[in-house]
Image 1 (cartoon, one colour):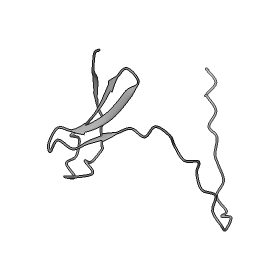
Image 2 (spheres, one colour; image 1 turned 120 degrees about the vertical axis):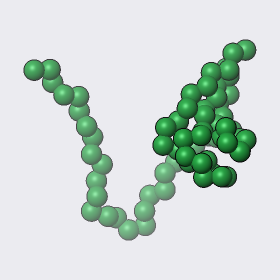
Image 3 (spheres, helix red, strand yellow; image 1 turned 30 degrees about the vertical axis):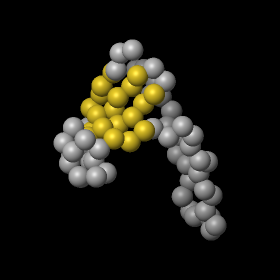
Image 4 (tube, one colour; image 1 turned 90 degrees about the vertical axis):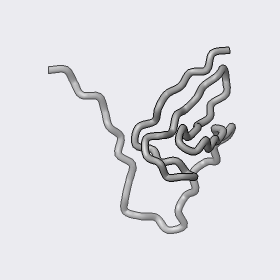
Length: 71
């Protein structure tokens, strides 16, 4: 199976803090990141926990952007 590599711009390695040295690798259904500086590797989580709702409501809301209309 082919491994697809993509650099992730602006990301620091969680281990060595090297900037722009993290690459995301994809092979079939698997995805993981690796640092080309120190060799750190981390698998992509298989599930994502739902976001926690704050105990106290704040005055910030969700902004939904809409596509621009062609001129």
